[in-house]
Image (tube, rainbow, N blue to C red; front, side, top):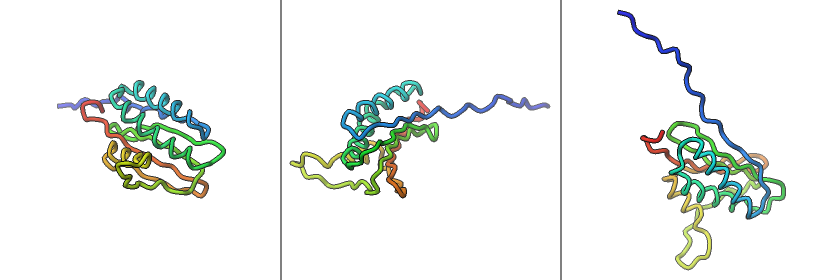
Length: 143
């Protein structure tokens, strides 16, 4: 009895997307467009609302660092079950999740990111800044 050998090459991983943006509030709009377009390309438009909210928060945090050059926004697919959103900025100050009170006008962004990612977010410090990442799970039937 002979066993058939599948000689089909493995599928290439989905191509990532990266964009350099100025430290400006309108950069959140450009970041949302990038994320939405990539998720649509990958057949994952159902993740767009959460992903756009997360990337807006991460870009907003980068804008508030006061850096003057540019930030880098990226969307990756490290595994079939994960979409990773990244924002790199020139500040070495890590983001801090705070417990904003009910009357606070701000301070809920990272709590929201934490909730939407089920705690799968973090920061990598570099000599000249940091990268904040947030991972969204792709439902099994969509991976």
